Image (tube, rainbow, N blue to C red):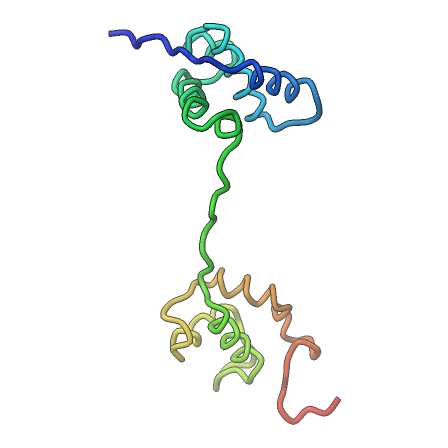
Length: 160
């Protein structure tokens, strides 16, 4: 059974705004394709025809049309900002790990390694669990990824 044709009425103000967006400046490809899809849909083209013309899927064209009908032109053309991943370590945990690395390495070790920092952070209960990459990025952001440099390491009893 065929879907009913999708009817999208794009206002003349929105059509003028789309044409202005397409005629001026550099835009993201996604925004341009969505704008073109809306223009074609406003000219009574079916979603599969628009999809073939713009090399999109019919489902993508329908989503653009539904977003326009629900939230207007900005909602149809642009994506919502994404929150991103939350930080794995709290500031207090970061500070404790950095303080640990600034001290002497454990008995039997000549220097701190990323693997050793990871093991000791969990063993000393500074963090419940942590990955090596998280530790590596933390040390790199604190300029502690080269501990052999004297300026980065605080050693007790050293005079400057």
